[in-house]
Length: 195
Image (cartoon, rainbow, N blue to C red):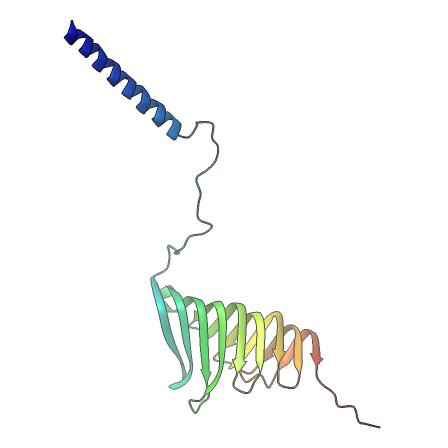
């Protein structure tokens, strides 16, 4: 009789354990009516069509064998058989024909097209020249073949004695032959003669 009672007690423990496991498992599973989708990333971290991915990449820009600039990027995606680079956290240092540092351009991202010898910088673009000029815009193209900066975005050019703003411009990299395209305005101090 005693063994039958122990056997019944053992069965009750096994049944109670199974009921507990099933109950806990059901509580852990989401309800079938729950329409909440699982979280997804806002965009892909790595583009699936990039041929190469590089970190801390440096590229030298030359013109007929003369070093015209050094392009640095935190992250680089290579496309089109290595002729197009998509860059993140960009720093471009310009040099004169004598090899002296002439200025620096920074931006959040850029596209470098080696076939066209052209860099299109985007996002908080800032150009700081050695002569004290400072240009800010959201988009700027540097065409190495034409040796020219241009944009159709709003810009502000700050010089030691004046400030020019507008929408769109064309200029040489020294920002001396500067042509504003639209909504141009300038501010400069004026000396009023004493009477």
